[in-house]
Picture 1 (cartoon, helix red, strand yellow):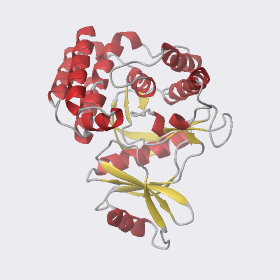
Picture 2: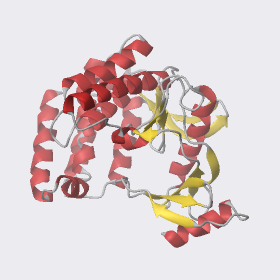
Picture 3: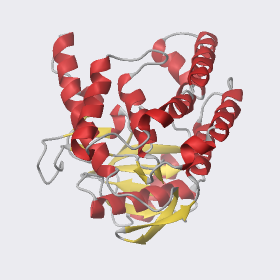
Length: 328
């Protein structure tokens, strides 16, 4: 991959010499590769493995959010979705990664710190979701700096498409039948999902994708939360983004974190949006079913993380899916 990245960087910055390329680590997305590059000024280069749409979408959303929302996002230094190896080069965002900010070894202090951070994340999500669109849809690019070029579609169809994107980037096919089960659940609940509001969704609100700085500054915006990695962004039900954020920030493989963390996230969201998204509780069980794919599609990654076998995790993920399907 180093050779591909160097070719991309020579195209993007023909007058600059790259001193060092290093892995960023932490990503389970096999559809692209992201590395840190250093030529005296640090930057990040994402190269897509053949899917130009991911690069076009992320480049468009970064520009759109920077123009329309008080949320810090990475400045785009160079991008070409039409290159042989589609790429996006961004500058770093300010602050420290959210999942690395814990004050000490005292569990109560860390929990209090997490609650404070999650309130800020909730407010940031509510800010992102604040503007409504006429329809859900897939993002193709920009119509103008302050207007997304959207391919409108009914929300259940867009949700189906996000399931297929998860299948594409998944790294384990042992529970491939889970994708079909989730599609069936979405279709069986099409009426429940059809009336959802439409907002811009980040699509991957996880600790590694959030950076924390001082709130109320030009660098960090009013809440001091910067967000990276927008390639899964789409327009759809804000409740789905909130359910995913809760799961990725608070929960483990098949266990849920302290209720205080979920409550803090929702408290921050309510404070900014005057409530949770309309119909949140009614549609939440469906989105919890969809979230199981974040386990079953990446069993090999979880096995390494949890130091257990893929076989054991497969049984646990299958049981979790069945339980969530029964709860819909």
